[in-house]
Image 1: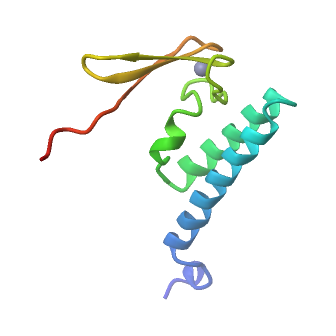
Image 2: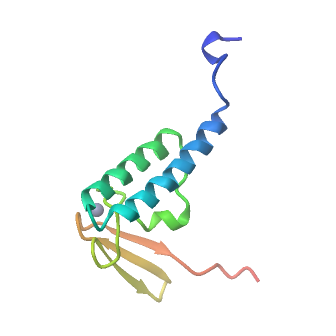
Length: 112
Ligand SMILES: [Zn+2]
């Protein structure tokens, strides 16, 4: 047994913790945004770093809460603009910091 692995927790434990922490950081960002948008952005950066480090996926509801390019925290009509488009149905989010446009498809594919 390799020595360096002996005391490590299984990787899934780290992932679980990282995912929890990411969710928590977004909650913090939301709470702190009014007082200090910069701090909210900082929390998003931390969350991003955690997620990429541990290869954790962002849950869908968090994908529309920050900019993937400049990692700024999104608050509709404050730091981003949200529009919908009917065909194909998607939400279009424009980051007001860096101008990046993100498309998020919505509506289920017709399975039934
Ligand atoms: Zn941006």
